[in-house]
Image (cartoon, rainbow, N blue to C red):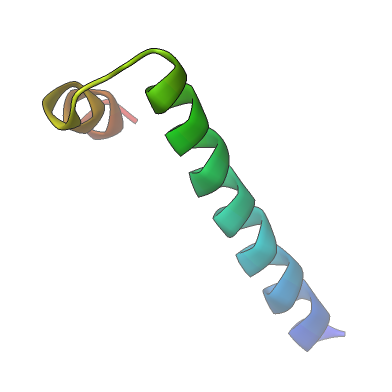
Length: 41
């Protein structure tokens, strides 16, 4: 059960990163702008 939680949590983290990358690409953000946004989280 605990192992399943870890697996699902990791999958969610991977999908989150993929979504962020798609959004950054969609808006044409530079690495510098992405860093500013990520530092604000």
